[in-house]
Structure formats: C-alpha cells, structure tokens
Amino acid sequence: MTHQAVDLTNCDREPIHIPGLIQPHGVLLVLHEPDLTIVQVSSNTFELIGHPPKDLLGKPLSALLTVKQIATIRQCLSEDFEHVNPLDISIKREAKLLRFDGIVHRQKALIILELELKQKSQKADFLEFYQRVKGTITKIQKAPTLLEMSEVVVKEVRKVTGFDRVMVYQFDAEGAGRVIAEDRADALTPYLGLHYPPSDIPKQAKQLYTLNWLRLIPDSTYQPIALVPAHNPVDNCPTDLSLSALRSVSPYIWNTSAIWEWGLPCQFP
View 1 (cartoon, one colour):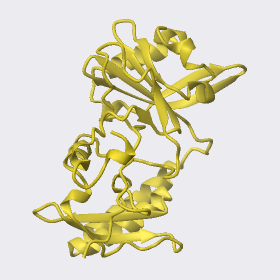
View 2 (cartoon, helix red, strand yellow; view 1 turned 90 degrees about the vertical axis):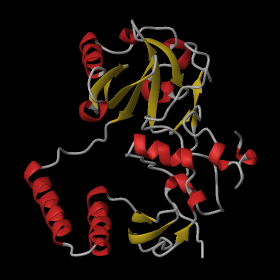
View 3 (cartoon, one colour; view 1 turned 90 degrees about the horizontal axis):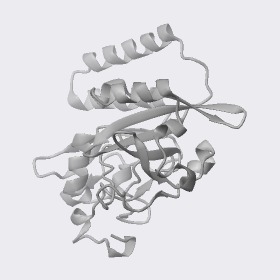
C-alpha cells in the first residue's frame, strides 16, 4: 500500500506487519533451516557488515558467523526470545572485529536475525544502576494515584533512556485516548492533554503492540531500507516482521507533524 493510497477510510487495512522495509540502524537476515541458509537480507549489509546482499544470498550463515555463534543462535531458537536476546555477535570486517547486539526469533518457517552495532560506551556500574532503578521503583510505589504514578514514570524513564520525549497514553473503553503525562525537552511542542480518536491507532497496529511491547524508532527522519529480494523465496510472500525490532514504521501520516506509529497523537477536541 503506497503512501498516496492510505487515507482515513482504509488505514485500518494497511499491512504494517509486512512493509518489506526496516530502519537503517541495523541489518536484517532472513534464514531458512536446516542449514540456516540466508534467503533474504536488508539492502544495507555492505554499509554495516561489509558484505553486499548478492554475496550473502543463498549462503549458509556459517559464511558470516562462527560455529560457536551459530550454535548459540540454534539454542536460543528453542527458548523464549525475549529472555535470550540480545546476543553478543561478532563479525570480522577487514582488520576490524565489529560487535553487534543480535536479536533472533522464529516466524513460521523462517528465522529472522537482526544485528545492531554495539555502542562504544563504558560498561555501566552495576551498583549505580541498581540504586537508580531502586529509587525509581520506590517513587512509583509511593505514588498515591494513577496520574501521579504516570508523572513519575515519564520523568524517570526519560532520565534512564535520554529520550527527548516520554509520554503515557490513557485509553477509554471505546479505544479513544489522551496523553495524561509527559516529560520532554524544552524545545519540543507539548502533547500533554491532547485527545485522539480510536482510529488514530488502527486495529492492526494495536494487535502488533500486544505481540511486541518494545517499539524503538531512534531517528524519526530516517530513510527506510528495503529487503532483497522483496519476497522471500521460501513461500514467495513478503516476510512477516511483526516481532522485528527493526521493522520500518508505517508511512501513514495524520498531518504534517504527527505520525501515529511514532506515538505522536493528533489533536482531537
């Protein structure tokens, strides 16, 4: 479904789980058992791991990763992927050893492996992190009302993550909602108190959020990366990216400044 084809009457039919696109800060590999053959890749593999798509397609994963890393991936596939991810993945590129956070999950007959380059930062001090989290939990537990708890949550989550904006939405019985708490950078337009209709977040999007609770879009101005080939050759269909961390967001735009899948609500009296 093209951007031009999406409107208020058909956005709830947009197939957002099969966009054929990912966000550019990582690489996605689609694998097929038993040899973990690479059958589909994101088109940015050369930029991030030094191998163009044509050199990876049809090759076993062993052409890219070590035997030990592949064994770890196979073991993880039999467990709850939320508890085993991320994996520590290393790929040699010329004289450098690149380190990635690897996220792997099974999607029907396919296996999806996503790689995000590790950030070069010092290891967090465990005691410092423990004290910060402990204090946050204490503040949440002591909040006497839902509203006050939400106000604590947005402030503390923003401290930990460094995000420019953190919000809490409250939905009513019909699915309409409003922003009841917000912590943001001073330069950003406030969304606190804005209301939006049930259709602002289509049914298929809500379904995805019940499957995959974590949705991160580091750069809202990114250019999406296409999968190669467009359809995976196993079933000749677009690959289902419902559980993918890198899945590209919907192109559907409510107005010039708000995109529903980025969590920016439209003003609705």
